[in-house]
Length: 113
Image (tube, rainbow, N blue to C red; front, side):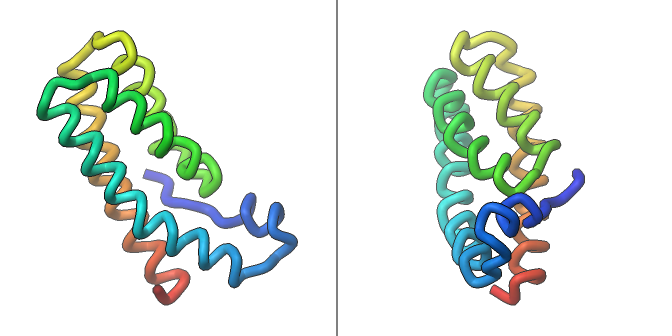
């Protein structure tokens, strides 16, 4: 996994590190809830909802330039919407969850949260 970058957000927010920290806090608090919802949806074989939540998560991942995780989210989003490739959704979600957890740890360390 390639981690994350705050460059895009720093640019968008004119270098306001406090605002970037606030967005990091938001992702750290809300991201795990979305991951949990995707996991629950997969466990209940509610593929469409898994895809819908992956779509929401993807937006935040893009802002933080987490390209590997964006790709996994897109896969879950597209295949969840059509209920196709269910075994691959399960496998890609496991990668997404693990990668996301690692990134959140790195984010907490970088921003001292």
